[in-house]
Amino acid sequence: MLTYVITSLFAFLGVYVGAILAFIAPDEVKPGMPYFRAFENTLLVFIGIVLLYAYGAQVWVLILLGVVASIFLYFTKETTPINHIAYFALGIAFFFATRTADLFIAVSSMIFMYGLPLGSIYVARHIKKSRKTVLTDVLLNFGFFVIVALMTNLVALFVYNF
Image (cartoon, rainbow, N blue to C red; front, side, top):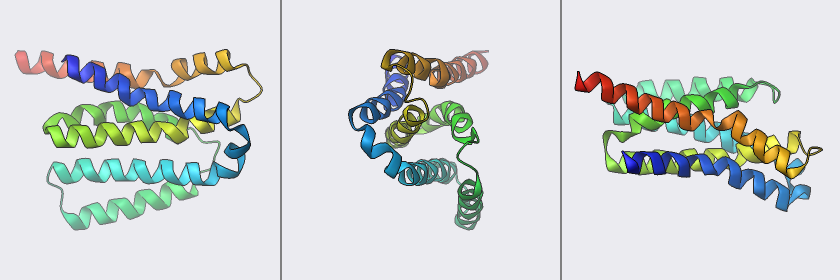
């Protein structure tokens, strides 16, 4: 359980690292926005495909879902909160990654990397606020990932113990 909590906090820190990188190099954020979005969307699709594959989905289903999800994410506007919502859903995916140690490490690392562009994009949209305010807002806006991950684990422990 302790490993699960520490790893969920580590995965969440990706958002803070992305935010700090955006503060360190603010001139690079605006030209990098399309690449951040592409990296974010690619990781989201890849995390879903890896989890589905680990749970035994057929390859043709994975390919079809990957293509459909990629097209959907490509055509979403930058102002839609789909990536914020997906970050909360990754808390549930984080729990499902506990099936094997290798899967847990891979998905945790990908969630950390998913947070990098997410934090950078958030800072770019709120650059006029102070650093302290933005870093507090990051915790308030994205901290639910840790709560969802921990609550999912607690619910699973409760259900399987009774």
